[in-house]
Length: 156
Image (tube, rainbow, N blue to C red; front, side, top):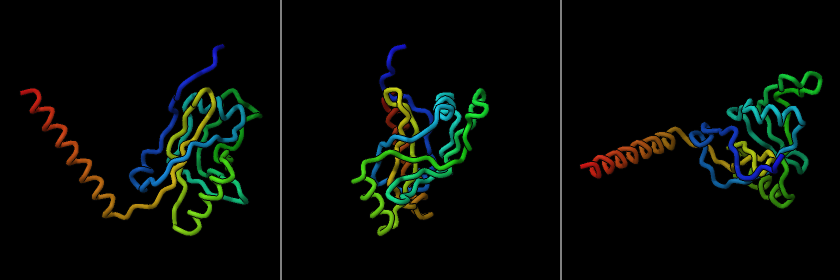
């Protein structure tokens, strides 16, 4: 079987972009068991209510639901167990200091396969207020109207 290349998206957390300002993004590996990887290949993962935190110098993602693999029997793990993220120590220290001091939070944005390995895109995020959400919705609507007007003008 040839080695897989490229990026194959599995799941994304679109709600995170609605609820948070994404300041920085980090690509990190994730420590999983075999049945969890097989379940992810089938697309049975949910990032919607997940977050990450730094504990004892390690980054852990919590609330990420990976459904049990159907043929996994006794090898299946708890679907909501905490999963360890693989980052460089300097990145972990930087994230820990930002989360502790400046009120940032770590949110998983996307789960994908890169060259056959499971990767997680972790976002350093700041929460949006209600008026920020309204502003971004208004900006998105106005951009859509502009694109529509340009498209109609090109047709004429």
